[in-house]
Length: 250
Image: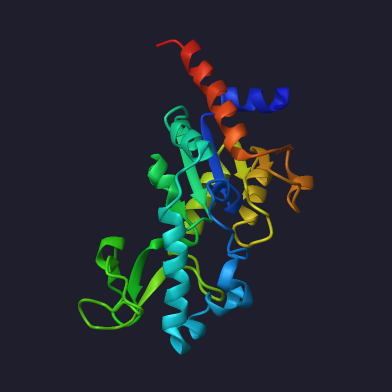
C-alpha cells in the first residue's frame, strides 16, 4: 500500500503536517456540506452559508445549523481521527490542520488543531463579538441571542466571502514549510486557500502523500496518492511510526 519512499520519509521525519477535509468526517457519518439530504435537498448551500442569507432569514439558517449540530453530536470519531491523535505523540513536531468544523479531531484527543473554517460548536455575537460555547446554547432557541447585548448569535464558521480565522492560514503555512512529511487526507483539493497548503509543502521540499477515496485535482502534484478510506490507512501509518519509536534508543 505504501511505497518504500513514503515509509522511509515517515521513518526519518522530525516534522509532520496533516491537512484533513470532509472525507475524514464523512467516514464517521457526517454528511458533506452539499449532501445533507432530507428536507434540505431543496436548498442550496449558499442559502445557509452567506452572511446576507443569515441576516435576511436567521431562523432558517439556525434551523439548518441546529440540524447539522444534532448530526455531529450523534456520531463518534472514527479510527482515522484516533490515529491522528496518536500520531501527535510519535513525531517531535506535529501539526494538524482541518477544514472540518465538527470538532471530531478534538473529541478524538488531538491538541491545538488549526481549524481553517471555524467550529460549529461555537457561536459569536454579530453585534459585540462575544463568543458563546455549546453549553450556552443548550436551550435551542430558534435564533440564539447574546447574553450580554441581545444581538444575534451566528455560528463560528467561515461563510462564503469571509476571511479565515485570524492567523489560521499563516500557522498552517508555517507548518507546511517546515515539515518533512505532509499528509493531505480526505480533501477534494478544490477549496482554496486550503488546497494551496499541500502544494506549499511540496514546493518547500516535503514528501507529500495524498490519502483519499478517489483521485483529485491535487493528485498529479503529490509525491504519491493512496486510494482508500483514511480510517484504514492512517492506523497503518501510526503502526509504522510506533514500530519506529520502539526501535529508537531511549
